Amino acid sequence: MARYLVTGGAGYVGSHVVLALRERGDDVVVVDDLRQGHRQAVSPGAELVVADISDRRRLDEVFASWKFDGVLHFAALSLVGESMREPLRYIAENVSNTLWLAEAAVRAGCGRFLMSSTAALFGLPESVPIDEGARLQPLSAYGDSKLMAEKGLDWAERAHGLRTASLRYFNAAGADPQGRLGEDHDPETHLIPLAINAALGLGPALTIFGSDYNTPDGTCIRDYVHVTDLADAHLRVLDRLNAEGGLRYNVGNGQGYSVREVLASIKAVSGREVPCALGARRQGDPAVLVASSAKLQRETGWAPRYDSLDEIVRTAWSWRAAYPQGYRNFSPTVASV
Ligand code: UFG
Image (tube, rainbow, N blue to C red; front, side, top):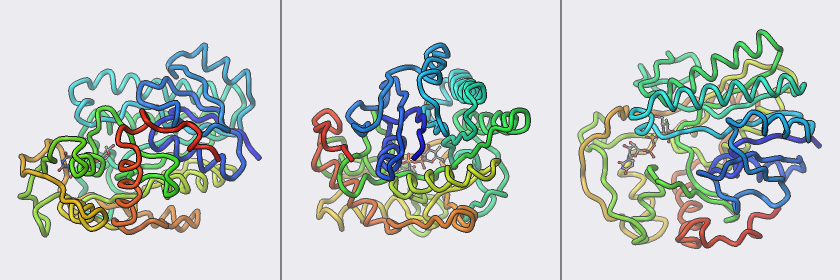
């Protein structure tokens, strides 16, 4: 049994990873300021420290109170559009929070550090599927902030021997298949939850951002990876960090689906039509983003279990249909392990 510090463990991906860690018997301390995260999303077996990770004194107290076998770092600003309006805040917060956290981990003698990163590192890719050798050329301040944070971690490895990993997620989607956790952002910007909300009458009609891309149906293609599969990838990479560092992996299903295919899947799964309208392209959207996770599969044995779009959509639909207000009407005992 090990103990992990998880920043952002009350957020979407973080909470699913905390659940997976608890399910295999690990101890978890979550640090989350609950600005984006939800108290009810933290599995009851985990400790929750409500704190802003930029509060370095508080972080030192956390490291003094527990001995950790590793740090998993999810807490970050993560909206591409917002990052273009506030680039300095994005870069300052995401980079400095990551590096001070790594520094605190080094001081506390904690040897493993895993951060969540993004496909936004690759900007407009030269070819797909995108593997780890693809050129890193972020188009957004968000993507650049994650690239800079990864570079900082390279220095933590070199100078201090901290073993680090970074997982570049493509489109995290879906919800815990047992309905214990789901996706609840405010504001929500992601396609699947917005489209489900529209179909359930919980939100406005969906605007399809561009239908004139060079793709078979004219809409953008993305690689939707189930959040429970993502959580499994974290556990595997964490274990691999016992032996070696410098791990950088792309994580996706390896299959692309267009916006229209996502809407058709929601119809197939739920029987409900997604009210939608065609709109203009969203600035900075590449036509196709699909991951190659071959390196992750080869080195950790990971493989997506929820690899069909319908399965991903079904779990997302079930959670939102059960909890139309998200965590606001969610029973806190449901997330127990
Ligand atoms: N889309 C719409 N209408 C909407 C919302 C999205 O048509 O209302 C389309 C987008 O144009 C895109 C696809 O649905 O083609 C998926 O969009 P999301 O906003 O759900 O996801 P992104 O692919 O834009 O973003 C994801 C991650 C980011 C990451 C980015 C890398 O959520 O964190 O991939 O490109 F930075």
